[in-house]
Image (tube, rainbow, N blue to C red):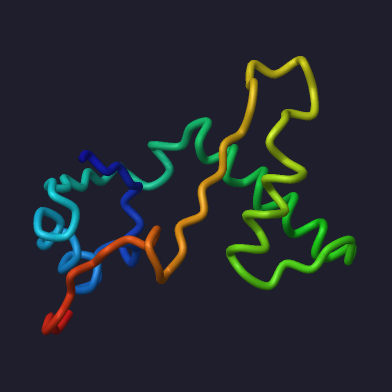
Length: 117
């Protein structure tokens, strides 16, 4: 997997992130190559989409139209209210959201027994 991120000096470079990268083959069955861009040089549609979602969630929480107090609650709200675009002017047909629980059958297996990072 190729992972692209901007070059923010404090982001994604801790011992935990680098440690996770070093065990990606054992954890996920494939290696991860992390590529750093100059700060703000890799901005694109994905950043605008993420910003749009954050803004909508902030609005509904601030206006108290719904209560979102967990990742699962946010996923359920987005699935119910935000899968279709607001306008036909955009070339987006549908938004797809995924929820990955921290425990249980659908959780990501991390295989981290005995690791000190």
